[in-house]
Length: 345
Image 1 (cartoon, rainbow, N blue to C red):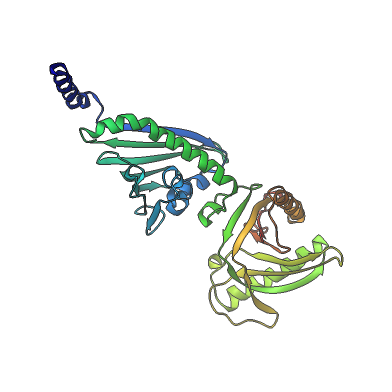
Image 2: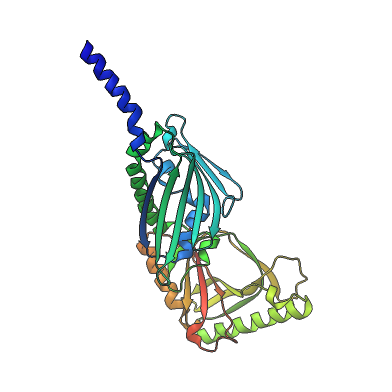
């Protein structure tokens, strides 16, 4: 009995003293290279709704409840997840600072960490199409007896970060781009993208499939509309959106094409006799930026259809083209940029 009492005394003293030798802060970090432009990777952390789709804590717990705090992306955005039965997997993030495509710092609460905790994510471009991602969690002022928990779980946090990057990489292979991510799309990349819909002022054309006839009809329609918007409606040229052609159909049997050429419009305007309003449909699209002459656009469209077949995506019969630079300014046809959208059924 005496020995047992002595053992208990030694054990209690050890429990009281050991935390002195354990760190009162922890750091867990990992990194990964992703084969995507930095702008696409950055938004997966900057947009907390996107982040919540793959982050490793709530993702591994189907019962976790999620809450968001406006504005959802950028500085001040917040995200909270949790399970009352497992508080060590509950947490809250708030974006403290955000340097676009460079670094985001979050205030972090929960996960059984200390009073002063933060999450830091660095984005390092490696060429135009690769990004090195560095992801770190730091926690300080860990409670005296909580140091036991932190000491044994710091490795677990590192494993969670690694797990998260694997999920992120898988998600980016198939997830639809947000409008902000779409701005970082590179020529030749084929991705899916959510489109919010858009109203155009247009002129309807019906031509043969001859590329020169289509180009002539497009140039004449867009030229007339641009003059109408700037000279008659008095819209400043810099306020007019990208010219667009919506191909309702291309019929190889009859060798005819029906398409609308126009510009985005947000105000009510009087239309001339041959003009009409046309709404581009909202929804999920397969997208790709074609770099080169308009005459070779069909080559990119065929590549997109091959990609869709491989990924088992069902595409609509229509498509539209948004012309990203001006052929009057870009003299080299090989430098022309055209974004192609094909609706996914």
